[in-house]
Image 1 (spheres, helix red, strand yellow):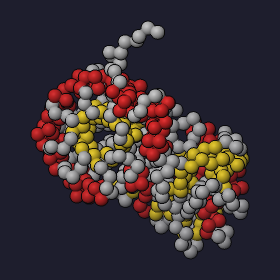
Image 2 (tube, chains in turn purple, cyan):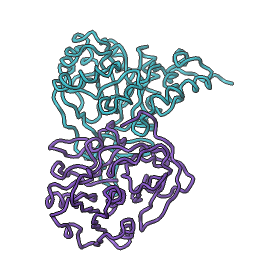
Image 3 (cartoon, helix red, strand yellow):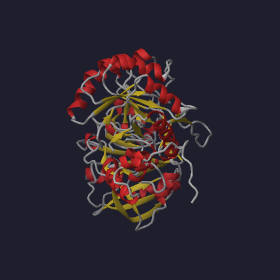
Image 4 (cartoon, one colour):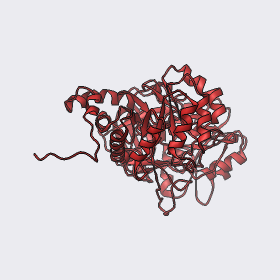
Length: 234
Length: 284
């Protein structure tokens, strides 16, 4: 982490429904957008702990995050209105390496979140495959025009051509399946996280054979380094 | 009043710029052998608090002394080492190997491991023989009479008290299963503050020992209330997770809180501290 300061306050500039998700836009202020796959801790109004979100889009002067309202914290964030303010800390952790020759972006469900900013930073309109559980969730594919989209029971992993450099984010079963198919893939993992900067020791996953903090080591890790032990929780 | 961190709530090597805001850094508890800690999920948010079951993940005594301690000392922040174990001899041996630090905190009350077989006073007593460093005994408010434990560790040679540790607690998920893989964990955060204020009050009254107060402090006003209950210093825990700038913020707020409460310093508030058990309301 670069600074010891308290989270900076950022005004909500937009809140758009995209299927069941909310695209929350915040005034960027002095924050850097960081590398794709890095994350920010967003204050969840009325809750004790902030919630981790990877950056979805970085329009001029804004930072945008995709929120899936699955619990009280994410619900509070999805209900924010233009003009509201929340505390933001970041960017944190390690994102995707962009030095890949044939990128293929793979997203499952809310795992689409870091991919629009990743595609922008890679440039050249990389191919994208997305999987969702229903057509309602698949509305989020609008964030990545041109993406190939499948809906359960078709699996996104059926669309992966092993000749590509896979950069993925999604639920753990999807990431594990990709790891088995493409050992060189870069995968963005998720874990319950109280702080995002290595203080709480809450977000451990098995990395390189030992329980290590995902916030410091990841959240993006080479596929071979991680073995999932637990369901992802947002 | 000095501001420390609660043990296990900050990694000074991962976030040195956060640790540098503190008047002293308290390490995560060091046990004789390395511990990987509990399986995830390890944390859960609750009403006005959170649970953790980290399970004393640490590199063990040898790893800590060889790797972590030299790096921590290089940071130049006054250092407290939190020591844990499973019998009095475990604690004493670690204490005997520590030097160059400001104080030792004996973790006598981690809710995420099975309790040490020896009593708090026995552990303090053998550690007293093992080191000349100041010994702070970290106690749990879950004991039916924490003041009695405080008296016992004071008699055994403790130089101070750290109050309070987290309280053992459980949270259930939508399917009515425990959220934490370990089943239970330690409750921290603002839900703990009234419990901490009471424990500090009665232990201050019982022993007069210096007390590092902790348990749900979020603001300078909270810190002043800890002083008014008998704490000489305070430690920040859960608040650091949401606000890595909390030490600087709380220190600034503390000055304002003193002005608002018409006391010159937190020490003045402490001098007026009375045990909650002995306070008698004066009719208006």
